[in-house]
Image 1 (cartoon, one colour):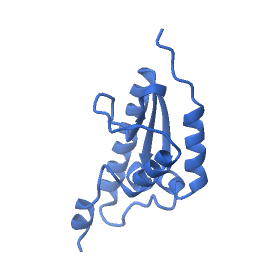
Image 2 (tube, helix red, strand yellow):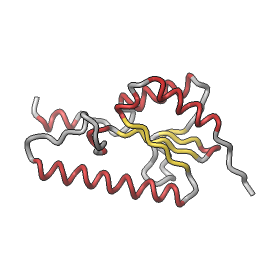
Image 3 (cartoon, helix red, strand yellow):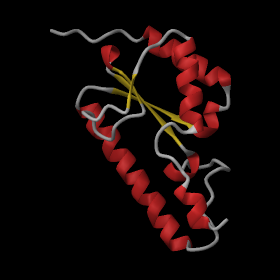
Image 4 (cartoon, one colour):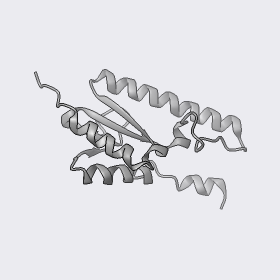
Length: 135
């Protein structure tokens, strides 16, 4: 299978790590919205009543520094380096826009999703977050 065939099968929504997080949050009794088109960047998971968004980032695509899953392919190194840099810049812009709009932004990396305790801790934090006042 060629690289273009492999990359054409990469999904932007309902990825494995995202589905793992969603299942764990649902099992913890947390309810959420998915990919809210009204918000900058269409965050993966939205807790509207608490004004919290959760971004589930793939280590490769979002350039997780220091992670072994983030390796630039050996072919077309310049193109991939540029691509990942653009993704990281867009991620920073989206986070800044969400924070400016009054949202709390949580980022969960693909490599962290494999640690069940991390997702359980995340569910605990979200449950403990107070709903913002509507004053």
